[in-house]
View 1 (cartoon, one colour):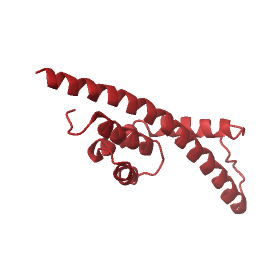
View 2 (spheres, one colour; view 1 turned 30 degrees about the vertical axis):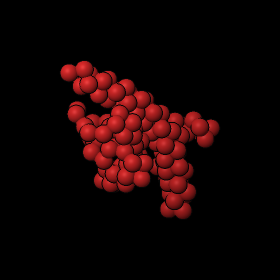
View 3 (cartoon, helix red, strand yellow; view 1 turned 180 degrees about the vertical axis):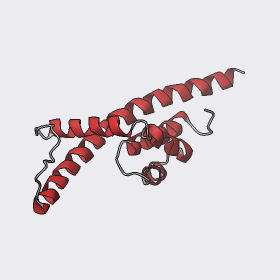
View 4 (cartoon, helix red, strand yellow; view 1 turned 45 degrees about the vertical axis):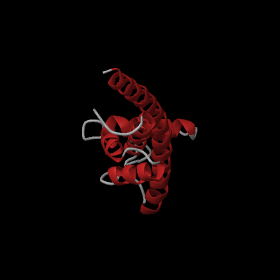
Length: 135
């Protein structure tokens, strides 16, 4: 995809978008990606595209994996924490534990995937820019 700007500018946009796409903020991932891309001075269009790493086909496996990563890092059981006979008071406590696992896992998986996608994008755009100068 041809985009104006330096390879670093474009890579920042993609990396920020992929990072934001790893979080379960349905409907707000693109807005968050655009905001962070503006702060990081990255490509806004590529940031919006990068958030599409999460889509209706990848939601369940991505967020399940993120939850498992967060549980592992917190050294908690990765079993789903909800039981049949759950009291309302326990629901709030278990909901916060579930959310913490998911957000922590999303942040770490997001950093990992953003790093990989950013490096790949940087070298691809660098190669494209180099090939344009030849012609």
